[in-house]
Amino acid sequence: MKLDEMLMLAGKEILDTLEEGVHVVDRLGVTVIYNKAMASIEGLPRDKVIGKPLLDIFPNWTRENSTLLTVLSTGDSIVDREQSYLNFKGKKIRTINTTLPIFQNGQLVGAVEVSRNLTAVTDMTKQIIELQQKLIEPVLRKKGIKHYHFDELIGRNDRYLEAIKIAKRASKSTSSVLIYGDTGTGKELFAQSIHYGSDRQNMPFIAQNCAAIPENLLEGLLFGTSKGSFTGAEDRPGLFEQAEGGTLLLDEINSMSHGLQAKILRVLQENYVRRVGGTKDIPINVRIIAATNELPDKLIESGQLRKDLFYRLNVINIKIPGLNERVEDIPLLVDYFLREYNEKLGKDVWMVSDEIMEAFKRYNWAGNIRELKNFIESAMNLITDEHVIGKEHLPSHVLELLHNKERLIEDARYEVVDDLNAHIEQIEKEILKRVIEMTGGNISRAADQLNLSRQNLQYKLKKYFG
Image (cartoon, rainbow, N blue to C red):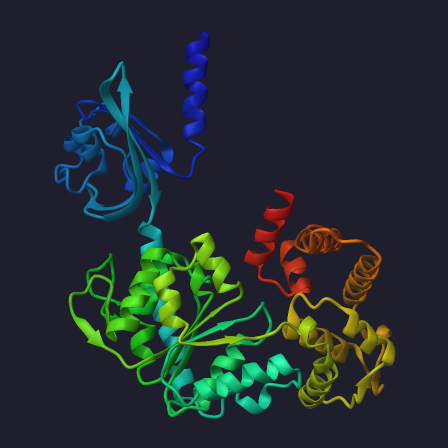
């Protein structure tokens, strides 16, 4: 076999391993390459497509609805454009396409298209919206469920008390609120306290983590869908409509694309929503509380948060300090969680030992209050009839985590630091490395131990270790 034949064969094998569909046509629109993924997306056998003109296979395609025909006509590239069309079986296909012209000696000789399949995702949209409604509606009707109020915000640290004071003032207002705090500091507790301390307390409170849902599903979830907006779509209200008269918490709002952020901004300015695929403007009366675990200034600088949306949300600003900034509150929180788990687990624990309390005060608390609560819960499940939590009652991974961070903090006290941010990053990197080693590389277990989301942990691992 000749070298060029071997290379061509290898190229075809590689194309068939890709998850993205690849479709190459010549200047007349005749298919030259049609990989396995593209055949799967469109539900067509390759031998029925290769060597055939596009319009023989897709007679309804035009420049307006086909990125391949557009590029062949204009010679211009198209990047990340959504395309929706019917295949020859009448099934609706939705893709995100990047389509590029192919030139040889300055002449247009064809086009190549790379497609990501959205068909399955749009089918999933309907299921997620239906499930979300089933979960939300019983919560709105059910009485006696857990609601958080200001008296459950535990602390005496000056900065924490200042955050509570601002939140109490916010409960007397209808303006938008932006809450900033690291993971586990209690942003939703503050948001609920504002809602249940306001005139809207008898109306819905709905919280949505914007990073937990793919972008193309999130839009339908927030704004609702209209019949026909995608295959199988029905007329369904989104979270804005379901929160009518109440409060909608949008956590990690910076995870949205700029396009979706612009739609949120319009809702804030105009007080109406338009369902996906709909033409009717629906008036709403919903208070928006947004939250982020990264500094808004940095998010704006990095382009993750639109300036205009930030200014519209930041009418009332609340910054929740991390637990390592309010060490004096740790004994109060420990006592609160002991009482909570004594009641839940039927125990009679009075305190933690002086040794454990001292370790808690020196610990870094990357997961903040949530991490402390998990530590106490773990110990309460291991204790039997004792009244004091000692190190023998902490799981081994917690003890090792405490020991490692204490040692790193202790070592840091005797070092001369030229660049504080770089030094903190080095400490964080070392902690991540040790926890990953402890858990045998299990991301889920490591995330649980660090009280980070899998997404956040994977981001940090990629940042530090590539």
